[in-house]
Amino acid sequence: MLNIPNNTIVAISHDKKWQTKEYLNSIFGSLRGQFKREWFVPHAYYCLPLFMGNQYGFVLKSYWNFEAEWNGGDKPEDVSINILDDKNKYNWEKPLQSVKPHFGMGTFTIQTTFTLRTPPGVNLITINTPNNYIDGLYCMTGVIETDNLRRDFSFNTRITRPNYKIKVKKGDILGCVLPYPRHFIDQFEIMAANEIFEEKIIEEERKCGKDFGEERSQKDKHKPRGNGRRYYNGEDIYGNKFCDHQTKLDRINKNL
Image (cartoon, rainbow, N blue to C red; front, side, top):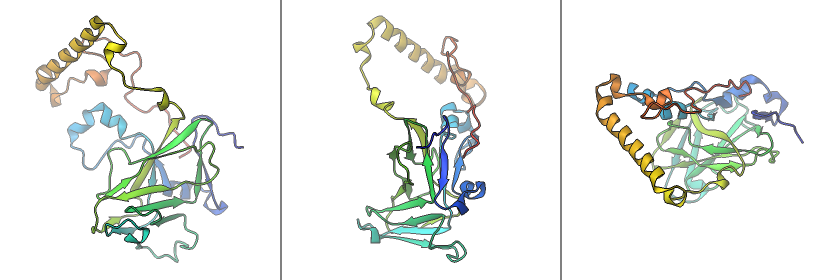
């Protein structure tokens, strides 16, 4: 078995000719530092949760210019994929990436010639790319044990609008993966506060939320861009600093 280093996603090509940084970067890329979105207005970048969320994950990019269309049926043949590139030029018989209807349900499957492996206990989750979209397409969520699975996995995309031709350009982002510790989410549940805390503590939290809301709706309205930036600066309404706070992604991953 491979000993995958911590904090690393290893990409293994199915054919050694694909095992180059150029081919890898044509399929996958990191969102770290990629905080801009074409549809954002300037004010949106002052929202730290959105600013951070935009940079989470590693994206899957289209290797092709293609068109996708769904007639509304549930069979694989009810989805048509039309590759617009010269298939001979791109070695269509053994492509770096294939785009084909496979499962039906108005979906198509994207298969790459890379196997992604993670350290022990770390899954990869396929998701729609944070705050990014192609009109009519939605990347389905899947959880893959990439520390155990010694082969590639597929990205499955749902077409959300029947009888509508969707155009995808080479390099467009089709989906995203997030590394996530296995069993981590299993440990959580949502509970009512009064099952855990005394009423006095709950009232203190209610007052804090109320005071914050009043500041946001009154004082902050007169500040530049209507933003007091308490959360961005890592403090609560009373100026108490957060013990741990993040305003940027710190680590530069050189693997993807």
